[in-house]
Image: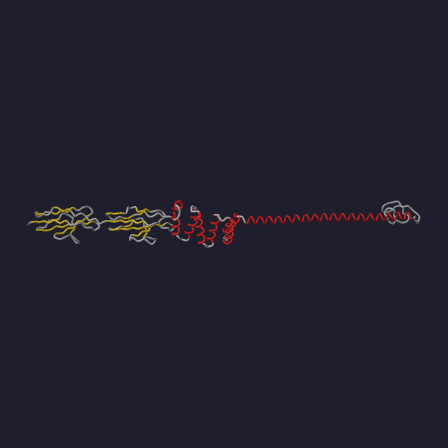
Length: 371
């Protein structure tokens, strides 16, 4: 027997269904056709309900899965979109960075400081391509060229910058430093001499002044020690034979240069600590050889008594030499006191000689002394 409510098999004699507790009616072993149809219909309804429940459950599960797939698709799309956006941002950043003067210049500076001149050159070339007028980039490029021992190219670049801006003291200084390291003082001098007065004044320490005489050149009557005005940091080289002075010539020691009678031509240059030479200073000292006046002798020519003395006036700085009956010369007697007149007729001659050996004209007097 089956429960009319849930269809569970119920043992004969049971009054209630052990599953749903529905009361079991005790009927005869036979059923009417009407009850059988009803029972069959209820069973079919229960089956249909189970099928409907299962279908509904499957629909709900399918809906849940579709929603889940949709959510996954949305999440995936968003993730992919986010990745694409990130990639796009990185590409834009890289593009902007690669096309940024400041970035390329900064990378060039960093690479140079780290000793990687090749990388620094690549970065600075990109920076110069982005801003061809940048002085900072050109200056950094020149330093990189120097790091790579390409001084000639660096010099060319500095000269181009100076030509473009002749008032740029920074570029003049950089080029002067480069020429100084290469020990090229003549080129340093030529660079500054071709510059404006403003630049010359700014770098006056690089251009030595020509030596100045403390003693005025010209005609003199006695020998002197020629002196120069000295300047700190400069060495004076000079010649006395009319040749051009150089760094192999005599060095002025500050004590003076000896002169002699006649023409004394002194040429001098000053050389500073950079090895740059000044222009040549020329001084001519013509020192004449004045002849002393003939000495004064007394008494004058005449006849005198025995015992008369001859007196010679000897100026300070001179010595008198005398003799009788001949002209005084080497070996003549030195006058130190009045001289006795010898008896008879004699010619007394005397000359003056200065400390430099210059002799005056002779003074001669004829004396007649009787016995």
